[in-house]
Amino acid sequence: MKTLILVDFSSRFLVQSAAERVKMLVEKILRDLPAAHATVINTEGLTLDPSTQTTNLQMMVTSLGIPNIPVLKPLSERFTLVSLRMSAGGRLYQGLLEVLSERLSGLTDLQADVRDLLTHIRKMKEATQIGADSSDEIQSLDLASRLHGNYEVQVAVHVTLTQLRSFCHDLIRSLRAVAAYRLRAAGTL
Image (cartoon, rainbow, N blue to C red; front, side, top):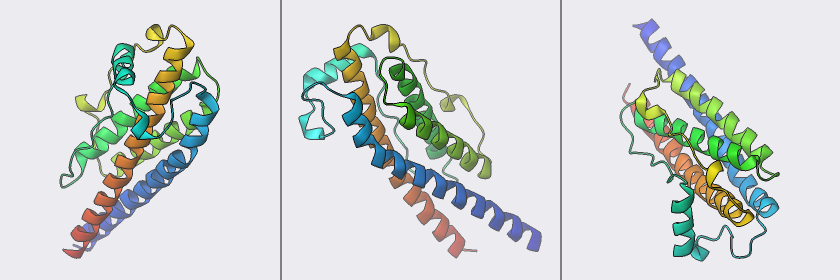
């Protein structure tokens, strides 16, 4: 019985530690996004203010084939689906930033932060003993072939950074919910 409790405590500590590192990286990305946006976006009207988004921009997003923000589902007992969506979303933005970095400079630091975020999400998944499954894979991106001019590149970067910001806010909310769930579960031992 003591061994089981020790293993459970050790597992919870690893998950908590990995989740805290994920949260810190997400907060760093959120802090750095406005500066990255200001550095690479020079098209008038493309701001991080959500009230300035237009229907025309949404049509452009559709024509460029930029995927929607991955939805982080409600928590299950082991938050398997949330963790898988975190990973899939991180890989989506890593792929988008990789394509866009080939067209514009100024995204390298953000790209490195998203790569680090994926590493810590993977560690969190390992600590909870969650393996990959088919929903953990991300669709291939055909964005590069659709970026014909500067305006398309500017819109793609703007939308990607805006969506990344929303995704990061969802990650923070999910990590808070995971922490609250873990505290409730710890109280029942």
